[in-house]
Image (spheres, rainbow, N blue to C red):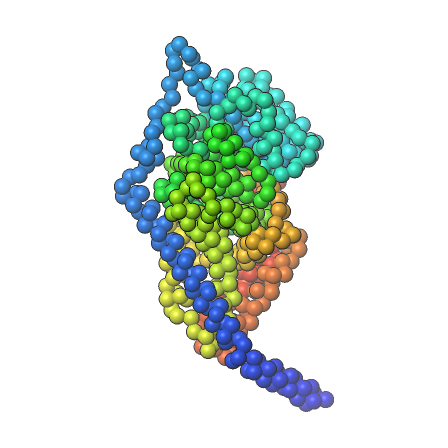
Length: 524
């Protein structure tokens, strides 16, 4: 009986091997060669993009193209006769949704902004669905109002349009008509008191400017390994991408917070729209097509909080990957038909800003490094040139790492983390391009109040909780098994070239599949 079972197993394995040999040469080899060609082409696009931005940054640093040299900046001064009326009227909007942990911090930071008290309006846009949180937010607003702060507490009876809908409703209030500029801060952002003094003068003295954007500074970057990885990715965005866009084409994506808009530019662009999950980027593109210029201030930093749980981070990354792809689909023809901006700016926005950074980068990272390269272990007839498999990825990785020099020793962890997250981002990108069912999914990023806990100077006590996620992420699990299989195949039948990397990357996918494992969470 055992011999019979052995024969059966031998027959099945030999039949599988026969089928594989028959399919591999005529089908798998040509398909894999096409995939390698496409991935190498996308890798070259990414390399050229990174090198170009690196050169621009070097030129900006060498020639000292500071904002004060490119645009007129003069400190605003009070007129003895006219008094404070010479200062522009500024609206400060703070949208929030069930922000139990950070509402006091955000309201306090907004009310603490230095500006003539009769020339500023603080507008708290509370979409909270928890009655107890609503009451606490309203009481906090009343407390600041009793101190003489011109603060407005605004609510609405629905959440249509989410953040974009709240901002749009806020702009409809009658008192907004007297305002010239609007500063926007998400609920976890803490601007320094001099924020308006450092941004508004650029708008006052340069009528062509529609937006001034500040940089983010992460108060909980050291919270855990995951927040360190996020810091590395976002520091590149702020150190390189935003600076390059501002210095060359006076265009970049509004980050949705820590920025000041000229209200006339916002209105001319059509105001806030909720057609995608990146209402901030949507507004920026439309305003740019109207001819407005943007300025990025790298030396002006606003404190904020990074997602410190994997669940929150996944929701955020879905929104940040799906939204731009969907906006690209909706606006590509409108951009190309526009007659107010130059051809080079159109090419920059369509090709560089959208296609390479928001579509190609996500898809190629996943397909090339997690699918195609491992497949060449199983199909050795297809060879990836060393320049495509080693040199280009190494250069791109090093160029990405320049934004956070203190984390260079974590580069290997960052590569594993980015490769693993690339599946989630690729899925979201495809959903955005195809306008599939989750295209407008909006889940507010959870804030744990790390900034508030650290306000006293000492670090809040933390502990590590190992817990399984709400559900298993099957796609990550399947990719993990695929990489593990390729690693085993490389050991048994291959040339033992990639098996260590494949095993390690498969473990990273398994960790991601079960979720939240090893996340450092503050004590409650």
